[in-house]
Length: 295
Image 1: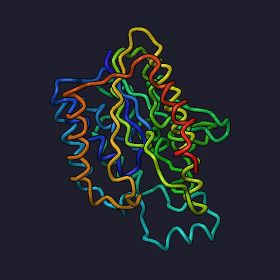
Image 2 (image 1 turned 90 degrees about the horizontal axis):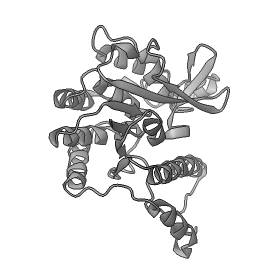
Image 3 (image 1 turned 90 degrees about the vertical axis):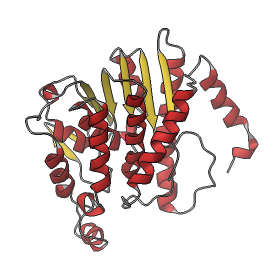
């Protein structure tokens, strides 16, 4: 069973689209899709048409999205919502409307999809991962909106007795989900942080953001290590680090990102280097012991 795993990444999710195009160009098609945040939206759209044409249609969608489709109201809206005690800087109505308008007619639940899909979210009430996809009657729209509900930026989604936010908090590159659901060959497209050296964080916002990225990266290392010691599983971890400093409201460079995602993935597929036993653990300890990495 082949699984595509798509990480969170906000507007850098366009990089994943180019990666998907490359995978289909190489004749690789998923039996299973797993996504977090922007990756959940990409995976959900692809699950309605898991073909090269479906990936091209997804690219067309990214090319036309604008900041107002996700973050309406310009720069004054966040300040007003903060002053009035709202749960997030932006309302979720615009994103809900945009996603709903681009889900094909007749598709409302996971049962309507053409391939299996799993979507991650974080439940603030229980402080645990919540996974959509096992219950095929679950509403698709609420699942992808919950997975993309970046805390403080977009409001939580309420589902039954759960308060759900961005799945990237607990599983930004949800490799273990694919493994637990029986995948034997996994292509993990990671557009989040994946070990690049960075300067020390400065300021409250950057330090808080870096702290979240640290948790996400540790989860990724744990997943990579688990797969490296699981017999019969081949993991291709495709890291795409371009556009790291892009503002979260900037959707103007989607075409460039799609092209870069395709380039990086084609380069990887021309010389695949699957995760091998033991290499992840060694990398973790070498990195931790290197004085040059200390801030």
